[in-house]
Length: 288
Ligand SMILES: Nc1ncnc2c1ncn2[C@@H]1O[C@H](COP(=O)(O)OP(=O)(O)OP(=O)(O)O)[C@@H](O)[C@H]1O
Ligand SMILES: [Mg+2]
Image (cartoon, rainbow, N blue to C red):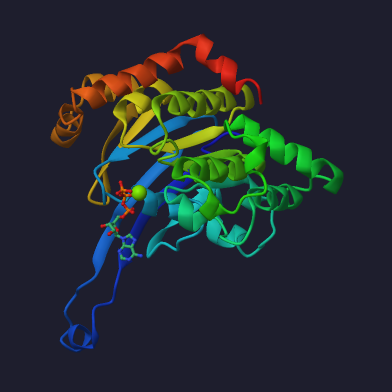
């Protein structure tokens, strides 16, 4: 199919109605988290979304997967309004667009073991019962987790492990579009490289369309072909990743780039990027 796989048209999201007095006095106390965001994502695009904390990245992601209802505007999946697709609860669109959440502690059901979380997801995808357990273990291996974690509950995992279970669950659906919200932020450099390599491979080999939300410009540079820069609920700049990062035209993008710490963190980031570029580092992930 031609045309964008995902389009957002004039998405606005405001929170809060104010208290009774505000309403009585007609005071507008709403907080605008997204202010008319429009974008188009082509099939197979790998798009980095960056911007300061609170700029609306996670809100945008949540609206794109249909978890948050926009105040106004429309999301289109392959040209079809998500609002219409959503009436079909178990419809195929559910599988096609998946999200790996930034806050993995609230994204996983606290009463379900890792194994159950994954096998239930595989059941939704229609994987036969006899194959689910083995495939769940394969998914864990894919994100660099051992089989010993399978019986554990989310609170028995570290933050980084939970984050990867969330990613494994999203990938278990074999989505066409994955929105990964800070998927590697709580991982050490070598694990970051491993997960980024995995995502990079999935985009190359399976044509996965990826929206990668991150504060880490070095990782975005390594992984993404396009970049979207957000500030205060709006897109301030977008374009080919290297063009924008090397020649930012908007002052805010320039500030964002200038703010990347040059000290220890800078070296860590470069170490991660170097590992990602190196074919040797794919050896560990290719076990999956
Ligand atoms: N349920 C909510 N009620 C009220 N305000 C909200 C709600 N969810 C988000 N916000 C506000 O909307 C703005 C955008 O939040 P969002 O989580 O999208 O930012 P973000 O860009 O993902 O930030 P970060 O980089 O810190 O994850 C923030 O100011 C946040 O406080
Ligand atoms: Mg966020």
